[in-house]
Image (cartoon, rainbow, N blue to C red; front, side, top):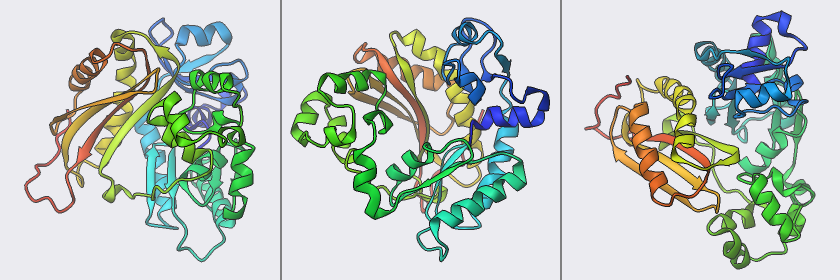
Length: 339
């Protein structure tokens, strides 16, 4: 979906049309934006930006609070449309999902157009789509013709398509990684393809293996419907690294709020066995801490976060929180309870 939360707020408040709008934190130093519309982005405002900084860049920015009950309702309506075309729907968040239409008789590009039109008729919200032979290509393609557009990459076009892309388009590459690659003389995927797995691992650790595949358009992940997913998580990569555990904890409430509401939709059908926190550090190393538990709370995630941070004390580029589900045939798992 195109700036989903902001688009809903503008739809419901037509006077905001054409005005820079941010959704999220209060107008104080500790507030953080969840998202913003395209008018705001012209001023350099972006998601996860502190509110005070967003207002410095765009003094006329209109900030509205989040309404997750509304976002969840619209998300459910959109997913119902997706399920009309395939049972293989893997939600990534309230506003994004993978859809496997390989068994559908229709042409993928035409199907995407029909789905986008149905979404607009139902919600009056625009959607963009990427069509590709795997998740990686589809995800990258979905961002190329925003807003309200689509891009299709056929299997035969993958090599040419991926080679010309800036490395920043690859998953997991932020400003710090981009600068490190520039020092290696790499700005495009074609240039990144010159490096062997071993060399990339020397520079980026385990992430180097992912880079080796990504820059060639390789992605073997399957679309996993909700009932088959082994876990559910919400994570965020930050535009600038977080230096302290307290800075990390400031980002937890919003991550938790969105996550637990998404989890609530599955509470009647999926059973939780573990709760976890994942951190990715500035040097691309990672750590994950998990505990047995069936009642995820903000306090529990906070404890795990501090424990994970204390393992290294390194600055943090990504925080993820989530739960692991019991297998669907587990007979002894108890029903999930949410606080």
